[in-house]
Image 1 (cartoon, rainbow, N blue to C red):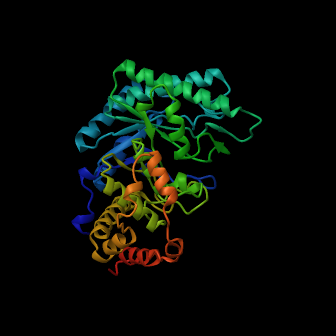
Image 2 (image 1 turned 90 degrees about the vertical axis):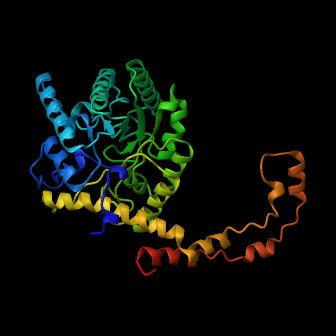
Image 3 (image 1 turned 90 degrees about the horizontal axis):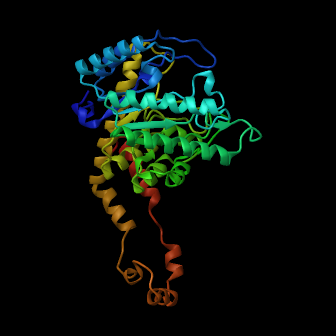
Length: 389
């Protein structure tokens, strides 16, 4: 295996405890792998060359752990991190698994559940910061409805906003170096989840009291589940300065949330995503929120983790070749040719500019007949990805 495709710390590849720790259970089948401890999973990730490990609070500390049990678990985890050198760039809270959250956490109709969710999240923030996390992700997996008769969506948004405002103030009061990243998903496990897309989250953030502290954590599969273009969601988040974290995986179009190995299905889409992240200079974690096939033992889980990182690096190398390919770049230059004729109309509005533009005579026939050469460009991209150029 070429060194070009070997993970290094500067690549910032991370996995969640829940990803490599998945025991292969689904709605139709029992687990196929024995659970490993968080410490064992740290060593597994170190073995495959990962940079870091992320976690939900209950991935590390069970929901019903005693204070003494919690302290022992966290102490052992810290020792494993120190021994391996793995980092904890991101943490989050599990506000979806326990029955108490069956109607949501921050948006539940029960005020005691809403306050319990705040308590649990503050404790998860404390834990994450203690272990080095600088990003805290919010995925509202139960923040939604199966029937609109059950919850007013305006009230749901109000409750979600109030919770985030409260938690921002908590982080400020504690002097934590921590940012929040909101993760969207259209459905599953709820029938409809509030703020279902990255664009919806980006529209919601300016309504918060501290929008500067809050960005997004877009996930490949979640946008694909809605039939959307993930690259476009990521580009919008980047353009707004809100790409605080990213979840990489794969998805077979509009189906249930599959969380396949990154790049294993949507090859062209994954390539252009990697190209974008590398071209703009994204410096955050490349987090793989994916799972190994249910057919695998833990050696197969290692193959899965190595595959996520290797594929990213293959796409990174392909992106560099795309940017240096003389024929592709010449074609892009021709496609985007600018003779300067429109320069007088560029920039901010002026009345003079508007009047000049209104009277300008465009050669509509010539513009309409121009071929854009996109077929050729797309085929050159396919040739590059398939290794024939």
